[in-house]
Image (cartoon, rainbow, N blue to C red; front, side):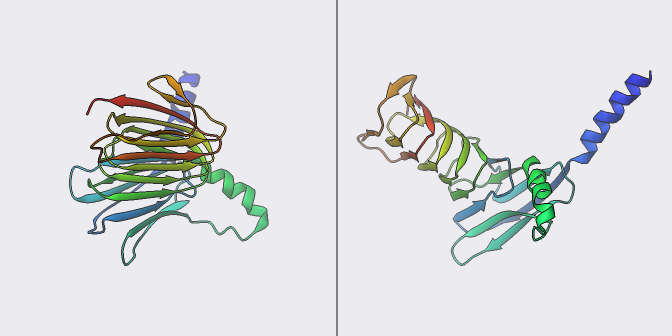
Length: 215
């Protein structure tokens, strides 16, 4: 009985230690810039309305907040730490805390999204808009690519399902490229007749795995 209580207590501590911050709003900006510093993962999903909905999940309560700014031509979304990193003695501790934070952003369709980051995983739940992703390291999972997409990263893996009439421009210096499980040489380029979408990857060490689907 004691052990059962201990297990339940531990589970409860884990559940209640996670904080969720939610912001919901509308914006007429067509371009959205998302800076992912401090996140382990960011997920981009389609919104069922004209609202932008941001959910920030943080295993360290009150350590991060969502910062939103409307610039002249675009909307800027950032995730900032509540801790001041000036004291050298706290730097290692704060860096460790930043590794347990992720976000889900639901966006109206047909937005132009630009994602910036260092070490972060990026997931698109088949977002119906254009995507530009610039990170140093991480896994990028785009699922079904609905529009133009551009990915630039130093190291990691890129997974995507693209329409068969999509123009492709894939370059990786040291990684591998597979299209429908068939290896391709880098750079790999295709120019399709009557294509309206393009898919671009530029990397040094990343691997790229693509699946072509019928139009």
